[in-house]
Length: 408
Image 1 (cartoon, rainbow, N blue to C red):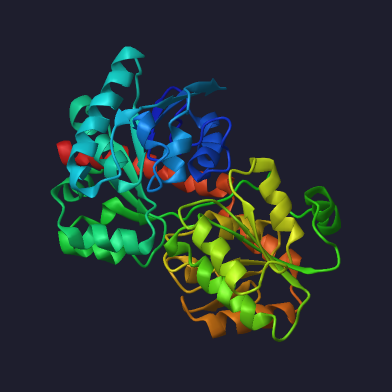
Image 2 (cartoon, one colour):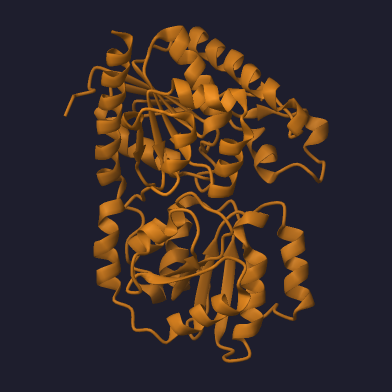
């Protein structure tokens, strides 16, 4: 494998946590932490929209926008992290301006900080991938694009005929999709198959590993005499928590010794809380909040008996890998890349999205199943970031080679 020890990597991401917010969509940071030893330096530019202060209190503002408004640049080891603070709004009709504004701000950061880089890796198609593709033109460096979007989001992009998206995909030297099923969607654009590959998300095995369940529950202040289900996801429509709450109502007709903890934050928090109250589920369903420190999430994984993800759409959710890494069975929906990972019923049980009765039955069945935690842990080892990063380094090498071939 090619050594990158004398090379610098530029990462552009829509979502990279600042120091005080390690839980928030941290899969890119976990990847960086594993790959940093292969490079001389890594520069991360997080496309963080600038939002006027008077708008931060508006009800339509996503909590992430409010949180990211206070993100500050920082450094650790050989990694430098910059937050762009480009002007943007959540309104769709200004979407085209978003890419151009982000590009200007990113290029200013590169120039003002004298950043030198050899490879670009962009996460998410727009605006990060678009900015990366433009930088490819300016600096003549290869770009790898990882398309993390959940499946519905991705399909909307594919069918939109948006010139900015098509430009981004066409100019990427390598496109990585986090699940296999979606790669064929790129056929409509006639891309060379050599530029397409599937590399799933991973998990940090030094953080997500089995620990004593009773000890984890004690640290979190959870009851030790209950069956505990855990759901970790943004409180947004596509994560499907309302169907999980309705499923809990069905489950409680059969047994009452179950508590569901939903961990996350988002625009549906008030709605989900009202749903819990309206169905009298306050003693069995708890919204445990979001913005958890990273070292608390493994405790929740290990404290639970079953991890549940009721999503309506996914790419390849990192929480699934994290749960498996802790030896926990996965009950979830048959969406995105999930069925490519949960390949048998020794790992978990899958149902169709929005099917409340089937979800309730799957959870009840999972509670009557004797799970082999060691088998689940051993299976998960192929998805540790150490393993995934090896594949990623190969993709970097291929991207550089493909660019050289195309320019001859």
